[in-house]
Amino acid sequence: MKTKIFLVVAMAVFCGGAGVLAAAAGQVPEATTYQIRNVKYGDLLRPKDANSATGTPIVLYSAQPWKCMTWRLQPAGADGFHLRNLFTSKTFCASTNSPRQFVTQIPLAKDGADAPVWQFTKLDDGRYKITDRQTNKVLTATKVAGEYGARIVISEWQNSDEQKWTLEKIDPKQLTM
Image (cartoon, rainbow, N blue to C red):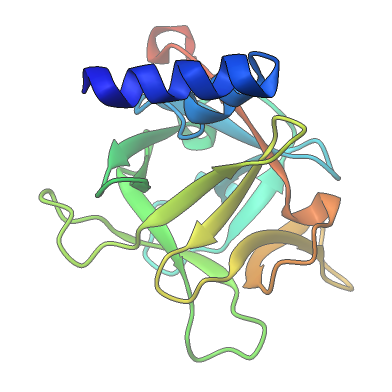
């Protein structure tokens, strides 16, 4: 362990700055509760209408201090997480029977078995790309003609603001419902 720390510090000194240290530390978010905000639309992830039914679409909604807009990141391997909604206690995944691969709510087993694993990759600007480990596609907000708000799909990475997310740590005690 001491050797690894020494090498990182030596690399930072050799490369001329703390940028390497910042890159080595903090790339994976802390396992805690967050509201997840889309960069393009500025709204938060939540199950549509705060519905707890399996199959409910995941959408964007204007920010509120609500449990339905808050997600607990639970470690799932070295750099992945299971996401659990604080209101529904469910997670989400992409539907495999849809060409657009809409993201919908599904039950989350207590032990996390067979639950989707999401990888959070910190981008250079401090935002995150959220990747479904099974498909290697990323969460993407998309406007659907005739529907209010944005739906969430998974798609190939295109480095667009629809695919970038910020994590806003929130204490569950601050939530109103």
